[in-house]
Length: 296
Image (cartoon, rainbow, N blue to C red):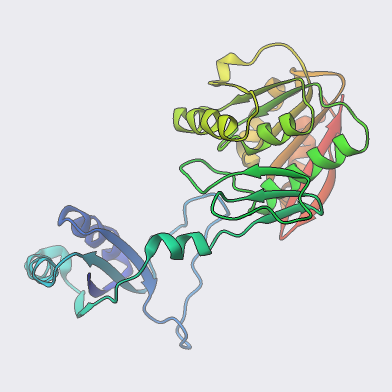
């Protein structure tokens, strides 16, 4: 493998990255060229949202190629383009062989939701303390248990069931990987609907449910039907506000709604949006995110 290393001003990053992809780069990454110096610049967006800028003031754009000749051709072709003005070639270097699968797997360890409830990738053995286990690998759909929003929802499901409350019929709206729906089924829900606007998420939920030996009804949002003892939605604050009437209309009498994907500063706006239907409270806070719950 060979890495082509370019330095570009912020306004050139996107077009250069797109050009590298068109020139058959295996991958393209962007880093702060001033990292670890006094000129280092923070760049971030609200979690789950697109950052305001694609690159930094001085960005290092790296492209991976199978052969040096391909990287040299790409550098030569880019240098001849008008949009390459202000950019420069910082080097072309061999990349040491890596076991990329093993390196990727090392990033994902078993995750403890409660002392006896764990999310475990398939390449790990469940810990001895695990009594309830969801087998789940990283994939196309959101939700592996590592993000605070997912972990808080999972903990609510486990603690609610372990406190003796029957989950009965559960709706996971915006199911992603299906992890919340699978947890509900594992903890005794009699029927679980896992719905998402993304067909890839629907298929991911179906496959993950099969792998975990549980039955879900997976589909698009129009498949929502009737009322549920538990309504789960781990999305983001803006769509959650829009969905307030729809989600609350699906809560059975005495049922619970559990909402995540919400930043601490967004608590009051969610409470206002849901006030006509149900009173929301902050149930848990973790790393700047909150879990909000209410009961019909």
